[in-house]
Length: 315
Image (tube, one colour):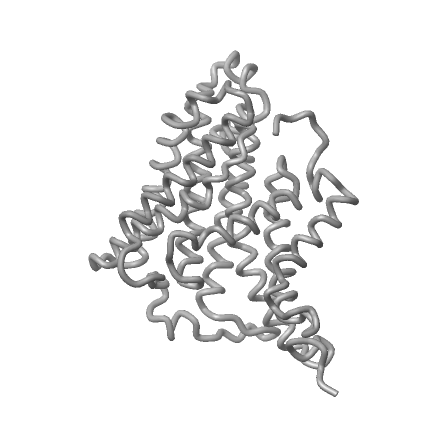
């Protein structure tokens, strides 16, 4: 009698299980980066930025144009980071700041409008001809970038390993910034109590702009790293954004560490569900519903998320 799973169960093929966990950690790093960007903005402004994915998508498409112009992919990543910072700061100053004291629902509508605007702009500018577009990996051709690397206990494609390393490096840099620099202290103070920060001489407006710029950089970097995996079209960040929101909620919307843990957890769980879902459950397309079901079960036990704290906050 054949296996009820789509693949041999872990106890029969432990190497496949290890490979799926490693790949899940890599994709989880992407979810963690976007979730971290969501949490950074939410903690500082109480705004759930539904346009976070489209901001990353827009920057990634702009960088695809530079790749077509012959610019090296590593240089494109650096230019993309700078463009993302400028875009995030511009959006905070021009789009968000005029409505920062408006009712919470109004701000939500603004971010949804920004979502539609950026998606429409990208569609009008770049979505012509054949879709999806091919975004190259910094590691070279597709064959080179996705060549398997043997880590001893698991094998993982080179680009996935790059995603995991860059993701972890960015998380460490964000931690060092917020916990070991005066600028990070000012950002944390602004997020915790803007009025008291202003009385202490901190330029709250500048800190909010910087916070949006940093969040935009983190999200765009995730977009440029995931594009070689999923290919490039105007909706390529939608699934990533959904998983990232799930990760942020799972970890706790007011916890940066929770967003990271939630991202890696969602990535591994999604990958394992996609591999080991019983055949009678319709197959790998059930991985999203099952992942979200697991999220609901966790929140029933701990509504604030794994590391979230109870607080009266605007939603």
